[in-house]
Image 1: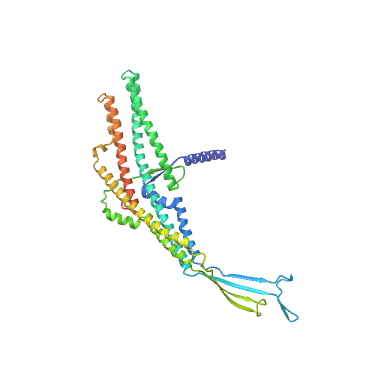
Image 2: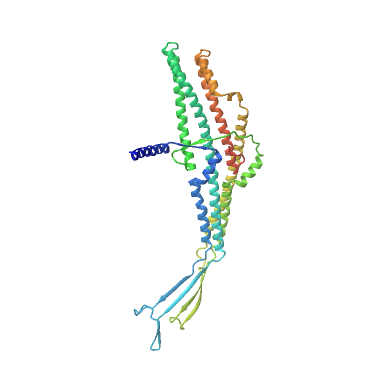
Length: 423
């Protein structure tokens, strides 16, 4: 009997745990906390980091010398393999050995090493550029989710108050105290609010999806953003930010590395014109003009028909292309920074100029307005106007905060370093 009771209780506990695990786990995150998880778990970064390891392995490979080549042959004509000796005073069995080594000339090996080092540096800068872009995406998506979450909380408070009002107005209509038109207008206001919230929650779902991918979180996780006010920030002069961007932007560094790589490639292609020398020694037991012949060998191709001119010209064109690309990136960098600088100033000034009285506690105002409407101190039109106006002001306020945070993230993105801290 006792065992049956214990088994029943265990089943209840197991089902309870299973149900609890199936529920959504809320993850309260600040932006710095999200960045910490992102740096540890983002699969795109992890995959890109392997390219650096690949580059270092290829650097190691480029440092190796070519393997020597050993050639040999043996007598086969009489079907007696590897017969080496003397019969009736006559030597039998041919032995021929040749050992050769390719010697790279004109510094080809060192030039290949430089090209491999350039490739590793390029992979590192590609990783940094990916990190810069994904970090900016993380910040803007986080800020968007914070804005949408705050608006969703407002909608919840509005909806709760409106549902109570609709219930009361329905009773008033049935009692004959208000018209059906007025009752339907209140219901339409609630319906419009529910529709707006559903659209908002669809947007939140998309942003949640993107953040869960960036942070590699499970399906059951719900990210709840935690934000704080951005402190007033005095920006450095624009020229100082431009200098910082030129020193830290990975895309510009990548373009400069590409130019260096093309210059090294031109040097390598010119070096290929110089023929490599193959040196070796040979031993012939019986097949030369003297028994036990030893010889030294040298060979090299004659650069008469092919002097690698096509590859040299292609390398020269690649250098011009790389120079042009640097100019393009520099122009883009300057315009990006100018635009992000102006957008931050606009967002900061707009927020500073907003009227603090518009931030009065909404719950108190709404309840007071509902009470005034029920007591016929305000008309239906005035109540709806207040309801829509305050909602619009609150949403725009959240948009201003999000715009300032995104402008700060964009300024950090365009300079390549954190000018303004994350909040």
